[in-house]
Length: 220
Image (cartoon, rainbow, N blue to C red):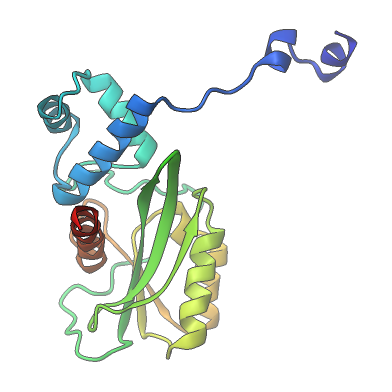
């Protein structure tokens, strides 16, 4: 009791034990993630209908919460598509009308969600636009920017630096530590425009290929 008073917390919070997600919630997260990778234009309404076809009667509010938890949103042109840190600098999109004709001319990056048995991880990859080769990747159990920087540094270490590096406006990629790494390597920074869902389409296709490959492996 005295320790709680000194710490300024209630006794109930001291004895509280966090409860992990239920098996049903994990199943819903997996189904939503798998369907989103097949149909990224699905919003919460269509996802509710899809889950109903799979035998799960869930309301739209719950699906919206689960999609927010996964960081998913319907991919179509709309305002405020990418949320960014208000204090981070955003760079212009440099690839509109540019002819990509050589390897290491343009690299791009993105983050996706990896479902596992009792939770999830995040995967970031760096890709060359022309060859579609994955130059580096890192996995993390949090959405902090350190694993993104590690992937970038690994790619710069093992390959010739690109002329342009493209990303979305996510806080991980607009952070000074990330953009500073590119500036130090004398790489031009490009970021997707707001409401431009296809500016980083090649790495989005990589995530779709990952989903399809996982499905084929599961059937073997």
